[in-house]
Image (cartoon, rainbow, N blue to C red; front, top):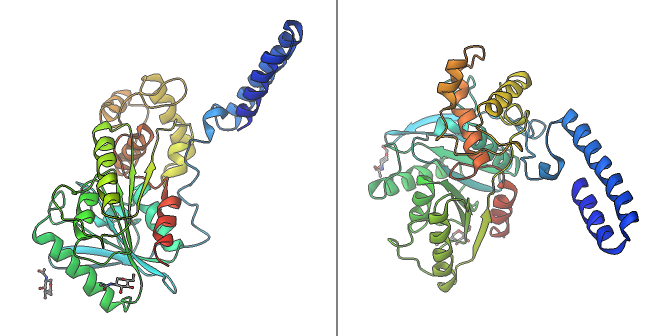
Length: 351
Ligand SMILES: *[C@@H]1O[C@H](CO)[C@@H](O)[C@H](O)[C@H]1NC(C)=O
Ligand SMILES: *[C@@H]1O[C@H](CO)[C@@H](O)[C@H](O)[C@H]1NC(C)=O
């Protein structure tokens, strides 16, 4: 923000002033900018011009509002994990991507000892609960979701659970990422969602028969994934032609800072976060501004870390770090960064 202000002053100064005045002005600005950079890197090490692209939410940002106390059940051959806040105003079904499971959405706790609590998943749940949604997560039967019988099984589970918790009167919304996004796009043809959000997924709109009562659909995607970007552009038009309300949220890359991992991952302290950041810099995984040069899955950071030997990492943190690296690169990853817009979408279509 600050730097932007200076930039525009510098720009108009250059246009209007005579050379000597300009030079004085320029020198002054240079000193100021350098001062700001140095001062700022002392506090969090990031170029201030880039700061507003970075995630604001910390892993514990919802601590004053809500805590995770889920219930785990087994039904129709799969597990569901859920939590209902006090006086819920809606029901949210969250569908993971391939290799995901319900346990990824909730922190390890006495109620769920095998839960994993991945940073983006858990923040989506926390935001949902904080906004007054009863949240239900279900694991797919296989590695990814399938679109035959599984659609009916999940519909069955959700309806059974809603009935049992007496939440029938509340509006129902769904968010699915990747494989879960395709799944939600199909589930929406047989369940009465008040709106849905499809994340990093274009949906199955070539296979399904979209009728006029199809729910309002928000695409949350990463434009770096050009193929999906094009498909989404196409499907936005298809849905609009049918009179369906459509929204699009684009997620851009952001630079890592020495604090990012500690800010986002419970149980990863600042000292480790800084060391990892320096290690990524040293290895050239990130550029001088902190941007990932490649997708987190494409760099061999775990192998590189093992070679280093001086930096020991708890195995339980690997998938958490991986997720944040993928997210920073912004090609294909679950994201909670735009959850404010997602929940606005849900709430807007509830009334
Ligand atoms: C899910 O389980 C219930 C209870 O066991 C059963 O009645 C129902 O038919 C099952 N649904 C599907 C789609 O298999
Ligand atoms: C769908 O749900 C809405 C509330 O979200 C309700 O008003 C409407 O009657 C439901 N439609 C059907 C067909 O159940």
